[in-house]
Image (cartoon, rainbow, N blue to C red):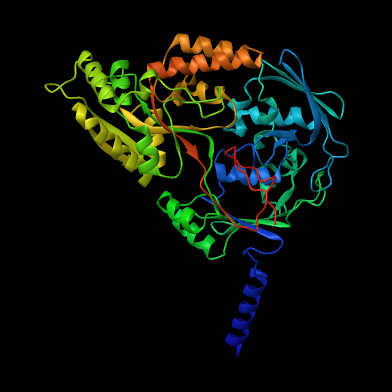
Length: 510
């Protein structure tokens, strides 16, 4: 009897501890979104992965925010003005702003946010993005004044980044890093995290005191789903409203059988391989150019990938430096002519039948990266080039790139901001370990510096294009294509757009 009574008490305690089950299926007032990885953190100033940033953007708002098309619009600031020289921005806050716990938000919060972001103990991955901000000051309770070191047309978009969104410093001062354990979390945006079960789901519910109209959907459920095929199956079974990816091998099938739910559109990302220019054989521009000339970009984009990627001969995606992406003069030559020119360049550099060019192609584990690497190796065989393959998981791969332990390696860039300099600054010598190729060109650096300091938008764009032309002429990278999104969106979701990679969901609603 004692045993049965004890067992009964244990069962009661277990029942009380688990609580009611949470509905994580799509419903009339609930959107279920599949992310390609688990949330890595909840503090907007301490995260850098896309999954965490998307959840942060649902919960925290800055002076501005991005609309569904990726354009900056008023956030906590109702309006702003930029000085004619581009070096000063004045942001006027909305009236009666408050955090979800009722604590007032005023202009004095924002200098403290920047100070925390830049503090060494915060270890914020996004600190460099805000390096152009010289001062950020409060002018009274309703006005924020920002001065810049150099003009930056993208300042409104920059201020929409979650790293400088309004977070509850009053709670952080009391609880330290434990503030992210509050349920619901104290937030400034349309939603607050009410529950998070690791590797299962995160539930966000409406912030009842958000300044804007009521968030269109009562709750958002984020579910991690690293395997895109599993995500596709769950979506097609009705278990999700939005999936952030699907296998490229299923693209044509989806277009033929589910054309209304599969979305694949260009966005701000460049896929390329990077040469190690610090040592032979790729310290020689002739070798780099010869290999680039022999690659069939259209075939890779259409046949190897096959999800609508735009072939690329340059770094900047369409729209960032002019009406059309840059192309070298040889891009339109017939393949036979390009191969002939490539052989001549390799011969000049000392490579040929008696001394074949040999190197290793390094890529992080992915069927897509492997297929691209195999295709390039085959395209170089007519030149007598012998390329071998080496793959590793992502962390090891990018560690090798930072340590310069590679010859040719898969890389790429997805925009933090919709600006050309966000792509071009990566390849400056001063970028240190992040400049994987080791590219060093004082002319390139000088043109880029002039472009960044130029307040006139048209002249600035021309200088950015000149800098890109200098980079592509030197070919420290091997551009292949511009990224496209691969999203699955249920027909009941209205207003879906994804232009900017962070895809802040201001538009989707049931």
